[in-house]
Amino acid sequence: MIISNKTPSGKTLLLTGATGFLGSHLAHAFLSAGYKVAILKRSQSILSRIKQLLPDLYVFNIEDGIESPFKSLGRIDAVVHTATCYGRQGEESLEIFEANTAFPVRLLEMAAFFNTDTFFNTDTILYKYLHAYSLSKHQFMEWGKSFSHEGKIRFVNIKLEHMYGADDSPSKFATHVIRACLSNTDELKLTLGEQRRDFVHIDDVVSAYLLILTKAMGFERRFFEFGVGTGIAVSIREFANTVHRLANSQTKLMFGAFPYREHESMYSVSDLTAILALGWRCHYDFEAGLKQVIEAERIKS
Image (cartoon, rainbow, N blue to C red; front, side, top):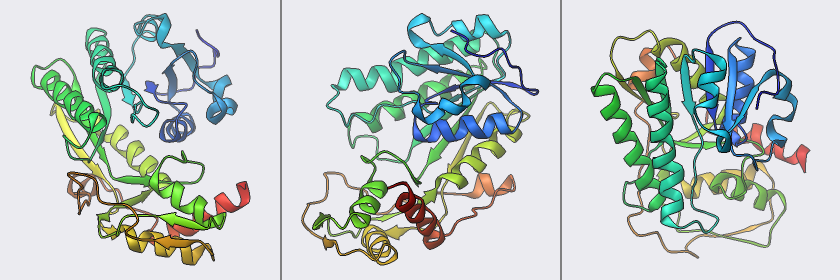
């Protein structure tokens, strides 16, 4: 179903996950950059994040067939895939596999069939066998690499570190900590917090996607991988303590209340070599990014 007949100048993009946190930010940025943007979503998706953008988007439902945007719009220059299922709502392994592996493989096949130039995939940095989500994401990345090696389509894999920003899902660690501290929850139960993570602000993530999108479609190679983060690892304990301080919170931080997960990664930081070579630079440092998000969350609440 097409909601708008408006045709912005520039290349045509098909975006999945546009109703989510990252996808909605990308939809806004792509439109602002002059791209013609189509989105592929489930019919029951909540549109609140992109309500103001709908007049400028071409909207298609998965249930009507994933071939619909390709047939309706003519050439689609690139697919930007951000849709995912984390398995946090009690989904079974098969549901997670269908959402994170089977569906994007079908979309990848469709894009290759209709001669789309590039498929941009949003990947995870989590250990492959941590849970069904991470396994399914790694499996799709391998499918994408295989398609690129066979010359069917260019595949660009974007490995996101721990993204955060205002109005993200409360199931995300950063949002959970920020909102708990702002609301002065009595206790916030955490692990010992020795794990070190690379926390990257949503605005920096969006600027990275825009740059990669601009550059990668002109590359001769068929497979590329870019890490997106700050390149600096911060401990979970430091993250929580910093949020607590910036929010002037009375919440008691209960470090050690939870055990580490099996196969818990104790250190994760982005390799920025490839994206720095494109000229990208991170705008927000750790504390500046947290200040911005805390103030935005405070205003919203």
